[in-house]
Image (cartoon, rainbow, N blue to C red; front, side, top):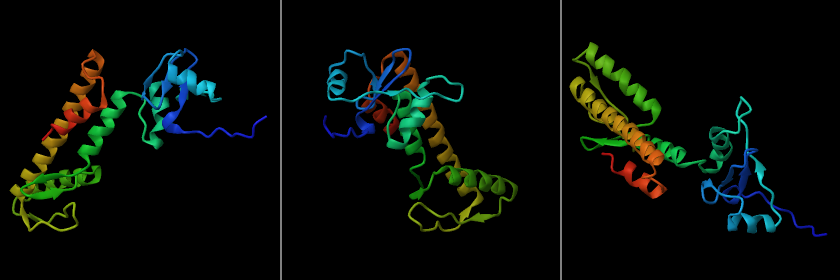
Length: 187
């Protein structure tokens, strides 16, 4: 008997659902039980992990995503699209030569600043940029314009994700590269 210990490799693992669905983290897709890579993996002494269950004891894609997300993996192309959109959404946006941070906290603060700018049109705003520097004082109308541009960018990204998911459903989007291109095209 060998002392060989099999090590879990989340980037090259399989999860098996009771209904026969078999997910390969290496390909990021469902595979058939006769998939040659899977058969070789089994022959090497590995055993698939049972597909995780959600709070309703359903072996769902969401439960699988929750399990593999910490490893930077995706249960399907829709989860990948959501991640690509989120990363672009929160990665900053340039308005008037200023790279504004666009994390969720900053988006919320910009919304509050817009309300203040509408209530007090004579207010000025100094905003911390993504590189840690500050804008010169912005007028209320400049702040509203900047926040509107950022909001339009975020909205366009969500619209792109919706279009991507429609393409995934229809079969016209089948690769991560297509998703990356669609997200990158949003300006």
